[in-house]
Image (cartoon, rainbow, N blue to C red; front, side, top):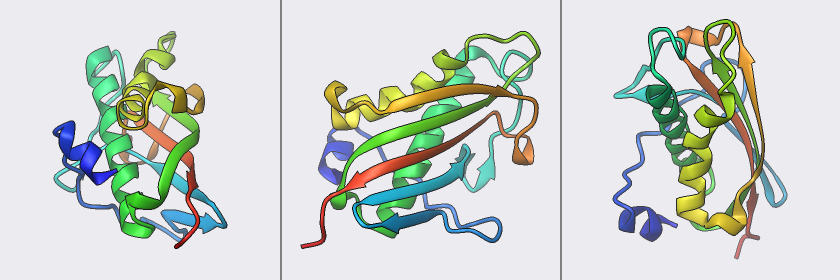
Length: 151
C-alpha cells in the first residue's frame, strides 16, 4: 500500500502516541481496531467547530487528515502491507447546532479510503454530530480494518 500512497502523492504524518490509558491500535486475529483519532498537523491538533471556525471544506480536510493519521498509526503498529481494507468507520463531527451535513465531512475520510483501496472496498460508516470533542478538535474517527494473515 505504500506504493499506492506514493503514486497518489500522499505522505503519511508521524504516528500519534496514545494520549491516555489505551492502545491506539489493538489487533485481534485478522482485525485491527483503531481508537478514535483526530486531525493533527505538525504534532498539533486542528481545532474548531464546523460551520463556525471551520468551513465545510475545512471540516472535510480535517476528516482526510484524520484518516492519514489512522493509516500512519496502522503502519506503525502492523505495517500497511498487511492492511487489506477498512471495514467500518464511525465519524464524529463537532459542529454548530443545526448542522446537518455530517456525511459530507465524513467523505473526507471515505474519499481517501476509496482512492487508496478502491470504490469496491469502501467501509460501512456512521457520521454523527457531537457537542464537544477532546482538545477542541472538529472530527474524531474510530475505525476497523481487516488484515491479511502474517506470513
